[in-house]
Length: 361
Image 1 (cartoon, helix red, strand yellow):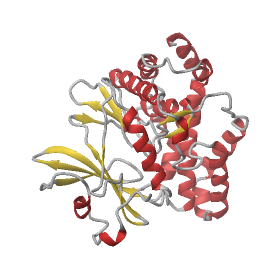
Image 2 (cartoon, one colour):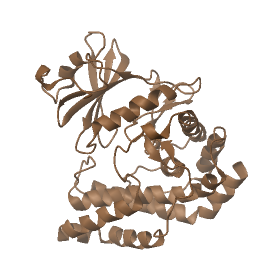
Image 3 (cartoon, helix red, strand yellow):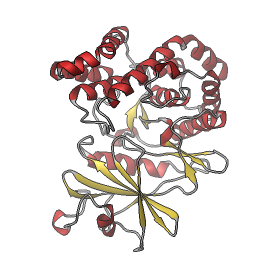
Image 4 (cartoon, helix red, strand yellow):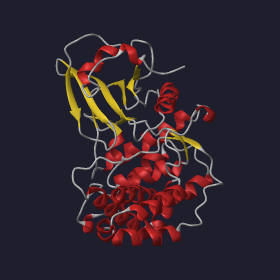
């Protein structure tokens, strides 16, 4: 059955968030709508009434997510499990036809969630408490989803963290890129080719598949404004099967590096050991689900994930910035160079990470 309201019932400006509110099952009030600029993919808005945040409204990027039915089904399946005294539950607001999202046409799809009150997200941190709490909540997320059956989750983006697939996309982008872009990205292209050669034997086949978030960067975690306690993970579009070191590596790359993802001054890219150890402390509190093989594989995830994000950003730059939102022409190039700089930092700290992980676990 289709998961949207019939098109013939909708005649609204699909770019106007105010116009779509009537199709969701919420109280009819004079909401104030504020756009949230955070995020590279979807258009996100907060709905406020009397200054109080009530809902999150999002226009989904149908160019990035080609099968929104699958995406929303995964979220619908995951949310009931993500409910615990130490995990704040988020609810999906149904449409007036009791569907999980609103489809106006092929490219205009909207959804709504309850908002987590008195919460805040951070792009980076230098606070050890934040790092500890991030580790705890990621461990709790995985612990809770252990109860969910794997076979009901489908891929929202095929090959999302598949290194072979990303390498193929990169090679295709090289073949279609303009000479100017190839020249500008020469250093980054060389790094990708060298690193792909190093990682050619990568095989996670002995690790268990898990229901992963697959995008656990720090700003996808909500914290309590008062005490910085981690509340829950947001941006669940990529909830699907994967390996735990995906979520581990993604979190570490955005916690131990205190600079932004598109930092131009690469000398500022860091690997903060205190923040790493704090994150491991937090994760160890909710880590009973991990196998010995997964624990041994964790440092590799810290090297793999920034490289995969970097190759994706570089590929997008070479293709003309068709995937990620950019505010200037070379932003994706800056992103990949920053990510590759951290990939190098991770490679330099592999033995250190292994020692800490062995000690903490």
